[in-house]
Amino acid sequence: MPPVSRKADLVTEAPADVDLGVLKDVIGFRIRRIQNHLSRAFIDRINRKEIRPGVFSALALIAANPGLSQTTLAREIGFDKATVVALLDSLERLGWAERKRSTEDRRRHSLYVTPLGETALEDLREVAVVNEAKIHVALNKDERNQLFGLLDKLYVACFADEDI
Picture 1: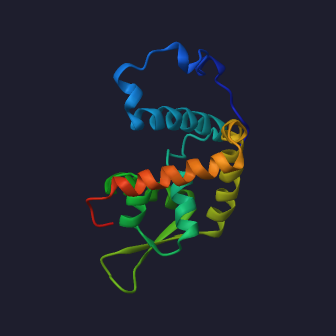
Picture 2 (picture 1 turned 60 degrees about the vertical axis):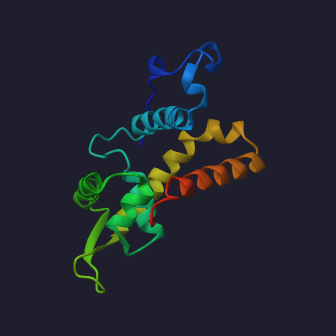
């Protein structure tokens, strides 16, 4: 999957050049603008229209958790259940994942990555590494670990009033 560049779409001014106003205290805005940039760049790099946003994350989570339920995947990936069903339909069409009826609960599907999906996951992982290279260089190992820990802490806080 060759890298594709859309330099015209890249941000050219430093973030300090714009007053964030009421957004300066909004964590979601700060996270979302980074996520938006990374997602656009990732999609450009893979350059395959049949691959929907979220495919890499879903594939990685299913590979790391064979038998994962659709409900748990929806929660972990941050998509609603209907979006996850469409995402899984895409993964199955690509031959990268499969749904099997759970042996414990026939109403539930267990998710598995296929051998073809394992290969695709490795290819997508390599694209993700390239896509995030600038961010990884901007932070040292301790800062990255701290960032990951803080982001995980915020994720748990999102579900503080829910049964997860």
